[in-house]
Image (cartoon, rainbow, N blue to C red):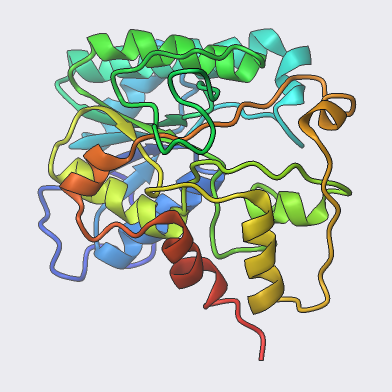
Length: 302
């Protein structure tokens, strides 16, 4: 029988047929998943094994006997993706070997795996120019390898397509209502000395992580651009921050060329086509509406 947290997470009328095994206990998304499971009354356990260790994953599955597996583990680098440039083996071990090993074990046990990955595998190009509204689709393969982190995510994006049990969710520049979380894109840009100003697809986790649980319940698989529809620029977000949170906030912009001088790996900029997700979940808000509804209104200062 699964070891579930001490909190009462079997109430709330949730069907007892669900049981989640979650990897990434200490991570941002992994923590959110646990809280949402408790709120929805879904029994869950956090995986104890390391993803690159097949036998440890098997032990977890045999102990928990889940209906669904969530992979919110992986290396993004701290304080940023430049870390991956100097820790390539660790990045491969987690982002490539770990993710594929988990997908393979889940496949052998007929388990659906929800994989939280990155959409930072594309860059605006001639077919998807900045400002055109032409987003990269789920069928598109990566056109960007400017950082080692993105390279590992692009590899898995191609290989995981062979696994019909995987729901692969491409997140971008994740944002949540917790404005003090250093992983939050808003925290990052409001604490940088200077920021670029480029429209991008982004993911509001307060809206999207509950949707990912619903996707598991619906047993959806395949590649999904897991962003809110549309794009938003750095300046537009900081203007919202100034309007809702800190009217005295100021910032300074600089160019991509100037940015390149202070970072190790380049950064991609893109728009992902979220129409597939929007069709499945018509209630999904555009990025700007979602930012206001889920992030800035809850943080509004009088």
